[in-house]
Each structure stands twice: as structure tokens, then as C-alpha cells.
Amino acid sequence: MMLITTSHRPTRRTRSFGHDLERVFPNSLYLTRGKKTIQELLMEAYDRGYERLLILNVWKGNPLKMTFIKVHPEDWGYLGYLYLHGIKLQREMGFKGLNPIREDMPLVVTTAKRVGWDHIAFAQVFAELTTGKFVPRGDKSLTYIADKYDTDVIAVIERHPRGMVINFYRLDVTKDRPVGPLINVKIWIMEDGRRWDYKEALGIKVPRREKGEGQESSSENRD
Image (cartoon, rainbow, N blue to C red; front, side, top):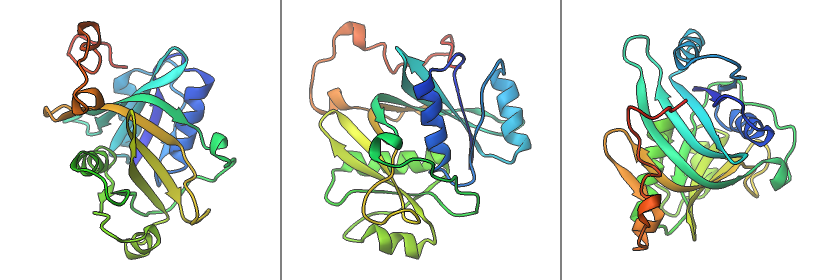
């Protein structure tokens, strides 16, 4: 599915976040960045057969941004970005030492029941970023969805007062509650122009100094 790494000089919490993601993205790998450039990471991902490169960027000791890059030797490119309010690690949700999923199965992306169109749109975007499979929730249970699509892992987009959250379920571990990590997303941006900002969605006036956050440009150092 994807190669997961960090920006240079990551914090311990960011590395733990990367390892947690390795445990919920099937057939994915967390790789220590070291001094590798973006081009070297892309070639590493390509050589290992991955379709995506995910870079976790740090700010003030915590993961701030998830950058998704398409892996292709001749047509690689930035796909989109998730800006985060915060995360909760698996160990903080009561799960330690989960094994990564080393078999072929889809990452199914769906929503909680009775959510708005913003949540459905983000579920579709998250599936696109991760090469997962979006499945409309309706009234279906997560167990029903997992059985139908022959998977053990489901990412569920849920409501949150400050944006949206992504909650991960590993049904091979427990069917009763999410295992994490829990990711609180405040802004998402796609390179094709699609975007969502929780403050704009709530009609909150954004101060001028905040408007630069979430605006990507070719001059920005994105690694």
C-alpha cells in the first residue's frame, strides 16, 4: 500500500505515530528517514512495490501534517495534505504491540452513521490518498462491511467539534472498539484544488495570519 516515513529530525511521538500507521495500513512499511531525500524515498517506495509515499511532518514536537505522494518513476507527484489538530496513539487507546498486517486486503474507508456530506467527501478523499476503498456506510455494521470486502481493517470518519477524526478498527484484534491511532483533521487539501477547513465550514472568521496555514506552494519545503 504505502511507504511511511517522517520529515527530518522527527520526535519520538511522530515515530510512534508512523509505527501505528504501519499497523493499520495493510502491507505497508514504516521506514526511518535518516538523510534520505524525497527522490531517494520515492525510489525506495517504487523498488518495494508501493503506490504511495506518506511523510509525517512535525511542529512543536507533534505530527502536524500528513503529506501523500504518488509513487511512479516517471510521473510522481504530491496528491494531498492533511493538517492535524492532534493524534492519539494506539498505546494511549489501550493497545500495545499490535502486529502489522502482512497480507493482501483492502483498507476500507467509511463513515460513522448519520454524518454530513463533508464527512462523506473526506472519506472519499482519504480512500483516494491511501489507495483504499470507499464504502458508503448507510445502516451497515462494521462487521458486515469487513466480511463483505474481506478485510480486517476499517478507517471510519467521525464527527468532532474541531474538524473530523479518523478512527481505525482492527477487527482481527477486537470488534468492540477502535484500536487507533485516532487522527483529528482540521484541514485537508488536494492538489487538484479540492479542500476543506473546519473553521470555514463552521463560518468562523479566520485571522489573516492563519490563512497561510494549509496553503501549499512550489517554493515551500515540503519534506
